[in-house]
Length: 378
Image (cartoon, rainbow, N blue to C red):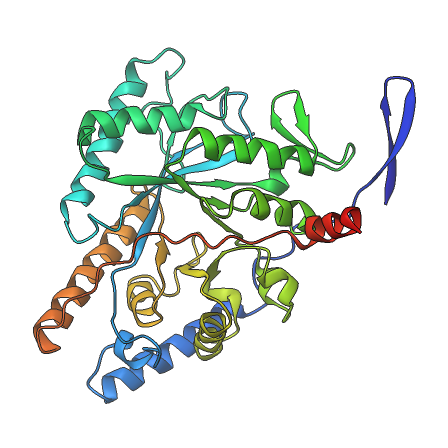
């Protein structure tokens, strides 16, 4: 599809690839996933074992605690404020403190600090005690940096500045802000950026906030070239990942090599068995980080998401926010992770539930830019 944009006196064609969001999962997917999970649970029961031991991959010799990704603030075009690019501002406990369960209490204290701060802030009327269905706080944000500054201030007040307790992750809603008429993203009200210009925006954010270690869904699925260039710019400093299920519907190596972290939902494969096979394949192909999550309000795995994440050796587990009914599920999953840790340390010849390794960001060079560089050199 070609449209024409006017820049000064010149009229230039702009190519736009239609890419409307597809259904999040196939018809009947939740039923199939639920039946598959139930079969695995029954098998574990018959063998008098746990689900995480039943599905443990042969390559996983030391089970380790996954790092939870917990959304705290929510923003975007349907919420107050001009900022529309970033949908969720999230916290990730650092690998050094994940075994210290005090981090959970600090997350609750951070949320309470933010709630108290928003109550007294101008423009927070009716929003300070309001949480979204995703369990996040809402506050009018006019700038992209505002969410980071709010979180950092809360962390410094609750945790102090001597220890590094939390890193950040942000998730975008690219389809919510894409203007198909102009072929660009509306970053803030009235400010639009092309996908290539958005690469610069993300790079500047990561450079300004080095504790932001993960970008989720920075572009539409169709903007693969921009995603590739983004990885070339900053994948040595953070994880870049996507939750778009189309990435995993076809065995496309190009899709797999444009991100350095695979954040998989349970509906990324028809059955749990195929999900296990897919994760094992990713582990054998490259050393990219792996994460697991359940899409909002599907509620198929629930507490068993903890066993799946541990048994499959995933580095991350993405959870709902704590200020909704989903928050109860988050607390139950975190409690289950503690039970798994205790069970391993008690019954595995004093084997410790391994600490996650320090973050290792794999730098992915852009094949598009490399080809252009080779052409210029030749």
